[in-house]
Image (cartoon, rainbow, N blue to C red; front, top):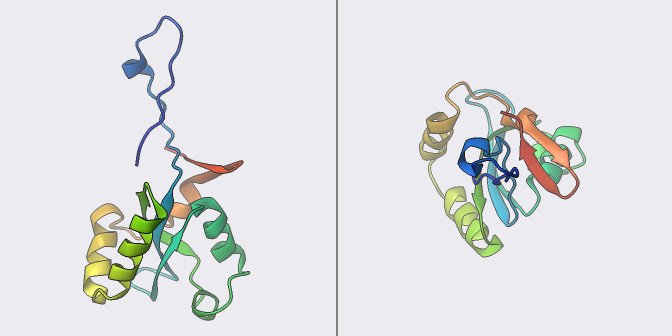
Length: 127
């Protein structure tokens, strides 16, 4: 996840790099209802809004039917075309591959959506 550099007058920027991250572009993400539960792979251009929609329940269909409210994995892409391509590929993956992808960055299956801070049109992560 890219970091935004915060430059402070008279200080070396590398020392004062922001601990938050912002991203414009598109996101591929995986939602679930519990550790090793049902998985949903999705794509969005606004991860904060989409997470809220899943969490608050206005998304009809598969995610509502199975109660998929935990964001357990996400990946940023600079373009929507790249994100859509990745999502379509991942939807055809065996479940085992998706689980390995989650375990590589989130072995406890934590709801990482709780680390998202919503700020206007952007996204910032708590560290």
